Length: 75
Image 1: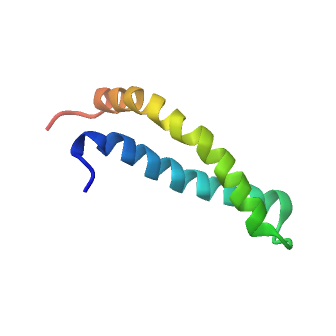
Image 2 (image 1 turned 90 degrees about the vertical axis):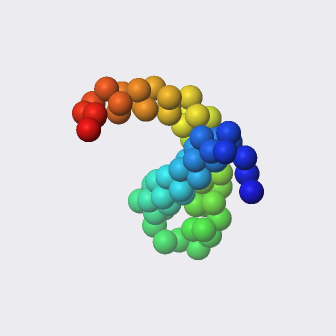
């Protein structure tokens, strides 16, 4: 098991991986269509996107959490 202190990093890794996979897949499909080699194009686009998405999520997440806390009423 991974120690709890790494939960935010693991969350960012998983979230950025899933979102970059989805967005790069849609963008690749819209740009190239279902051509031969589509999955190779998609996977290379995904890796490039994930390399940018992961550190971005790590940097933006604390700010986003503060914004959400300011917008949500306490029960």
